[in-house]
Image 1 (cartoon, rainbow, N blue to C red):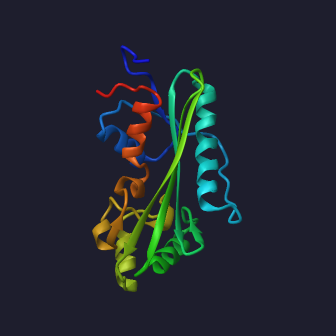
Image 2 (tube, one colour):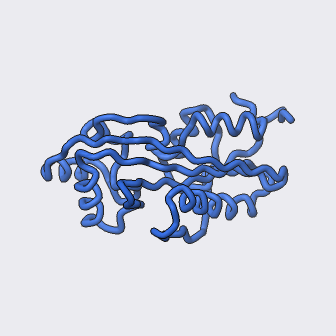
Image 3 (cartoon, rainbow, N blue to C red):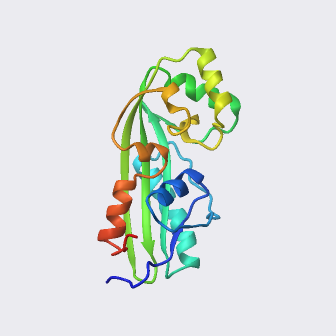
Length: 197
């Protein structure tokens, strides 16, 4: 079914990076921050954990706005078998960056797109491999002086001075920023018949 006007699109996230990505792609987006407690259980595999959290965030907003298409996501960093979310303080942020230095990690983003009234839910996950440069302690500290690491999984941002720390990337760059846009566009078009502007 094609709508004469684009349906209401809500981003269930307080992330300015996700909002920017959607707007840069030409979407008119509303932002609503979900009031849910995210799971933080290291015993749950990262793909499952991000999927659960993305679904929790989206369900909270979709219940309040059943006619809207709601986009929610959750991003975590995996280094070996260690999962990095957002650092709780500067000390943890510094520790995360030091551990990532010179190594390859994976950024996992789970996305849930749903419309309650139309009974459509589309969930998917994307992983991107990111190799960090070998960073001295001074370089790590300088980077954290340039960006705020506190609201970022892994304590870094690919879009903010990322060239200082990232040597190579394999996969979706927008996924590392917070939302795999190729897959999001495909879902909106194919599952929700969303008309692009």
